[in-house]
Amino acid sequence: GQSLEQPSEVTAVEGAIVQINCTYQTSGFYGLSWYQQHDGGAPTFLSYNALDGLEETGRFSSFLSRSDSYGYLLLQELQMKDSASYFCAVTRLNGQGGKLIFGQGTELSVKP
Amino acid sequence: TAGITQAPTSQILAAGRSMTLRCTQDMRHNAMYWYRQDLGLGLRLIHYSNTAGTTGKGEVPDGYSVSRANTDDFPLTLASAVPSQTSVYFCASSPGLADNEQFFGPGTRLTVL
Image (cartoon, rainbow over all chains, first blue to last red; front, side):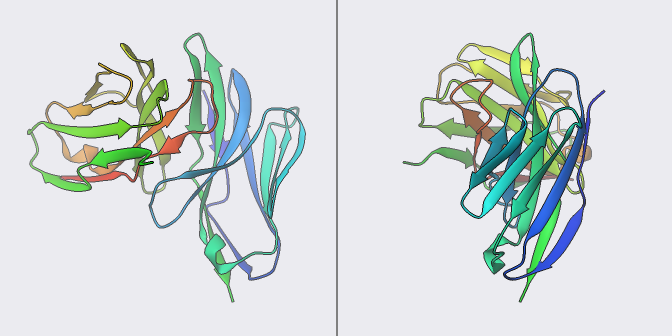
């Protein structure tokens, strides 16, 4: 089978740093992505890791350890607008190509 | 650029009725997807298409059908709706099937009574 685990909710204060963890179990693992969703709107792509290590994009960074089946999203200098749901997603390859399997999402609340 | 559009925005449907959710993209992406999102369950893949003329089943395909007659359109049909199909439906696209950045439409909120 396949599964992804991430915390259901996280709370942090404006200006702080927060880390959202994701552990996964899946066959055919190809990479780990992160998506952001505000208030049930369209999810938007944040980052992708295919190799071990840290990928940085502005205030957001994403990390992957393939040997540990683990990754995280790091948000720095938190702003109120970062309050949203964050989903990790595994790209799983099979004979028909790659498909995304999403975690259940982490709701981040940023407080003043 | 519109990106991906979905119609309708929301719909209330009587159980047993059929319904087609529309999805159109103008990015000339080869791959398209349909997801449903339920509270606490994240996004689950219903069906996908890696190019015009081909479709495949995702995690939760039962009760749904799709077609891909051309690159731009990927309609999702519920032949006989049931209350468990109450959900928010998102259409997405990507340049290729293995591309990790998918572009999502605004969603259709469907309630089956």
